[in-house]
Length: 188
Image (cartoon, rainbow, N blue to C red):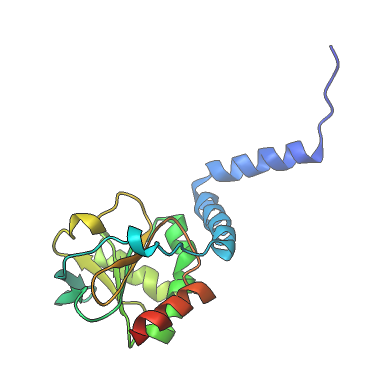
């Protein structure tokens, strides 16, 4: 039987697997891999005939400071709706792009970032990362069209309630394609 020589690729592979098994290094590696995806993956815009329509509603949520709020969805204002979590590597990877989009469009678009986590944990995460995002805890179940079992799941909903984008998984929300879409939706 012939002896197999150990190659550098074998060593790198074993080290990579070992790092994925260690909890302290697993999340940073997963976030980095998802950032690579975000760098090249822009959300897909639904064809007009495939766009589903949300019946306009008011989303009952709670701000991180405990103040209840109702946000109109599909009632005259474009909405960016995101379901995410602080423990979710794809969510963490796409948040910088969402932050940049919010910085430029936050006055004209409803940004609704929804998480089921404890408010203290979310607030620590947001503060540590330096984000200024409108994060909410849901106080009701969203309509079935806007429910998802996957994180992250993001929607862009026009002012009349049409779901223009539904994207599951990390994506580049600060892309030229998304910005052009928002500019068009805000003109209509």
